[in-house]
Each structure stands twice: as structure tokens, then as C-alpha cells.
Image (cartoon, rainbow, N blue to C red):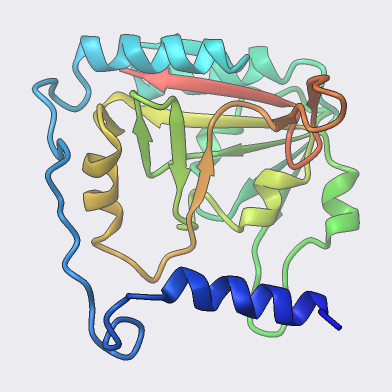
Length: 223
């Protein structure tokens, strides 16, 4: 009598039929890498920024452009004018939140040895999070966080309902391979890839936002 286990193992065996025995046993197969690995568009160029904005808006993210880092506090204030509570990673510049009204509670998530930082329940009670970013990919409209002190733990960007993410123009590249090359400089860092607000159409093909993360993504592009 066939069982699910024997069916699965049988499928694996049939898929591996004819594969050289060394593969999967310490030898690495040679992978052709003939795909385009660099772009003619320079990182941070106006063309690359325009592509990123187009993709982000197509994903229903809100895009805000400012000229310099001096304009970030006002942009954050305008975006979070109705938020009563905000969480920030420990390494985020405090000046970025300096123009929030006094009534807004700002909490710093600062995990220490023996402490995991804010719990999921505490984060769930917070309206928004503000972070920086590591690199953005124009071609796919993707923002990548790598867990550094100005971006914080993955949990703080997944639980609050609104994520405000600051992207420097110099951090925007055109192609995925260009971003991967930058991220490969620190392969030990945990990565979070964000392409628009959290959304799924798995349930009867109806788009539902906020299932796997924030329903609202605001991207402040600087420069």
C-alpha cells in the first residue's frame, strides 16, 4: 500500500535519475552565469530612480521625494501625522523623528544580551516603524534591509501596520545582480526583501493587504 512518504521519496528518486553521483555529495555543479550582471544605468541616476518609483507605485507603495537628509524630519512628520506611537531601531538618527508632535510616543527597540527587545505583542500595539535601508533594486521595485543598527530587527518592520523606509538615492541600483554583489560583502547579515506593502491574492484571487507585514509602505527617497 502506497503512502505519502513512499510517493514523495519515489518522486525524488525519479527526479534524480541520471544526475551525476557527485552532485549533492560535496561537489558543486558548474552554474552558467551568462545573465546580465551590470547595468548601463548608474546607481542613483535619475533614470534608475524613475524606474524604482514606477515599480513602487505599481505595488501601491507611497513614494515621497526629498532633496536632502535635512528634509527627512518634515517628511516623516507629514507621513505619520496621525500616528500615536512609533518604534525606531537603536541606530536610526534621532533627528529623523525630531518633528513628530509631542503626543506621539517614540519607542526605541534596542535588544541587549539576555533581552530580545520589544515583544510581538508590544510591537502590535505600535502604529508605525521608521527605518533606513541597505540597497534598493529599481528593476523589481525591491528594498532590502540587512539588519544593521539603523534598520533593526526584522520583527519591527513586519508587525506595525505602517513602515516608513528611508532610501538614499546613492543606494538605488538598477538590477538584482548589482544588489546581490553589494549584499554579498556581508553574507552573515539577515536580509529582508520588501516589494511594496504586504499583500496576497491567495484567497479567491481577492487582494488582501497586511497579511504578512505592514499594510502601508511609505518610501522616502533622498536626493
